Image (cartoon, rainbow, N blue to C red; front, side, top):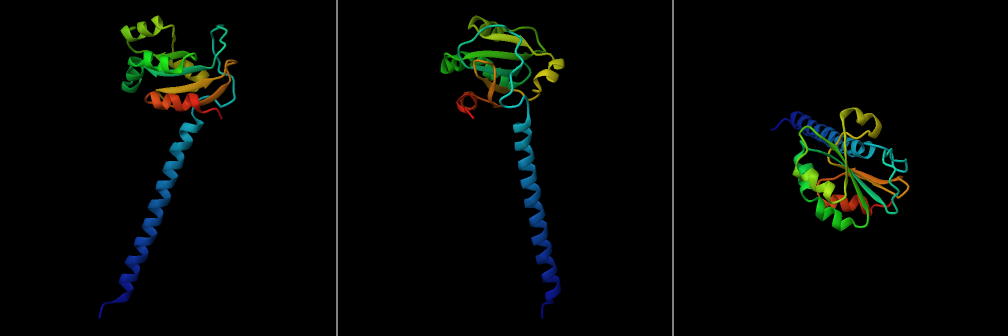
Length: 162
């Protein structure tokens, strides 16, 4: 005859362990979603932009780094991004570790404002994740924001008019 008590103990241990694992997995998923939603400046706040350029269209602000492979891919495809978002204005805040390269010069030739983003400015813009995008109204109010890794993500941010 098989002793029933050890089987019951093993069964309940399995149930409890599984429940704890599922709860921890949910908590981790929720905390990572909250990290991105809480990251950066708040939706509906005014973006602290230093340029005095008067713009009659919405604006995409990209935070990129020249040490981030995904950022470099976005920079490489900036012409396609600009064409897909026309007539929206694009501004790039670039965390630079290397001297200006051909891609940055190309962005400037396309009429994209490129601003150096030193680490001290993280206090102002509260943006540490790269690549990250803000979508602004013409009066510089933040409409939407999010981490981006390719054109589809950028289009989601610019089409999300919450």
